[in-house]
Image 1: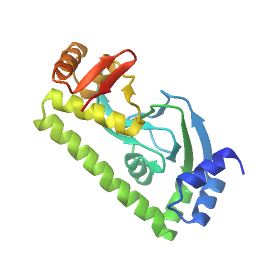
Image 2 (image 1 turned 90 degrees about the horizontal axis):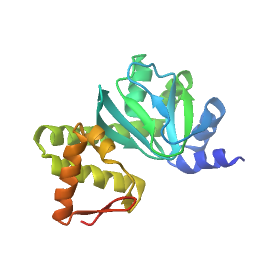
Image 3 (image 1 turned 30 degrees about the vertical axis):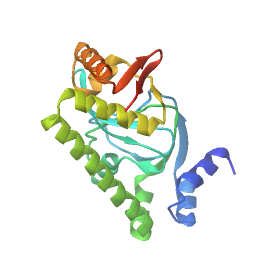
Image 4 (image 1 turned 90 degrees about the vertical axis):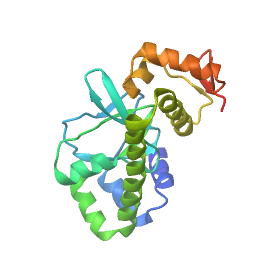
Length: 210
């Protein structure tokens, strides 16, 4: 058993062992570096990615601005990619790796058969649909009704949750891009949050204090 196969079996413990073996036989395991573009708006999805190890950020974009929708963590997949693949429709999202990431890429034909034969796979995707729906609903509520300091602080908290890092190594320009703002505005907002004791800007990044 290779290390990659061991990672797949560990990550997908919620699925039947026979299904995981079939996925390994029909799919392929790849490891990509941080910053790799996995999917672009308008492209067609040929294989469904399941994250085995690492982290993927999913967002929509327009010109030089982005709106982050959700993260994909180990044992999860992208429900928007899942929908696009089954409907033979172009992707409406972008997906990029946040760190080195191992993926199990599953072909469409095999996936359709497994969905009919394995209730656990359907349950996995229904659960993720619900989680991603709540993520996107929160994003819409914040954009429509939230002020920038609240949105920024919540975004940083989400980053801390998914990365597990105490000091977030993230540039002001990237935060501006992900929140659809300007770098100067983000810098002022970070200083405001720092004065309020909610975070501290330290060498190497940002540390949340509350």
